[in-house]
Picture (cartoon, rainbow, N blue to C red):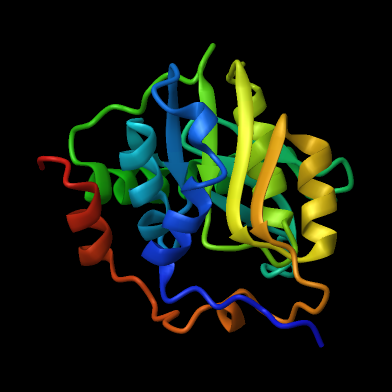
Length: 209
């Protein structure tokens, strides 16, 4: 088994990630953190690159008979549905409205009165604390593309080989500090991988309520 770098915590991982993103310093862009774990990773990146830090919120739509099986995803402004969803339009519409209501409440809690930055024509850097399968991020990428960013970058400290290959094919640039030959879970590459609370996210983002 290969020797594996261990990030001390998510902040440490963000500092390591920022070393690979210096070419985006002061661009016309925005960093979008995947909550909650992506926020402390994105925090030092946004500061070093001198870019605004916001959240990218999305949630899967579960199959009507098997909720854990995703048939699509919804963001605050977008939606992607699998061509093999096998669900009625009425169900999808109801779920979309319900999920979007949850996402709006979550956005308000974390971001206060800050309006989301329009992504049209901007460099968009999506940051998470790591990627195992990439399924959720693939849905996020598809929704972001509908907003016509100038460039779409996915940046993570660690990813499985399979996820790295999938994501690289779907974005303009995939930046990853470490793609290990053996991958079980994101958490194994962190000394401290404790869950991030809502209160910690609110403090890190620091938007007035």
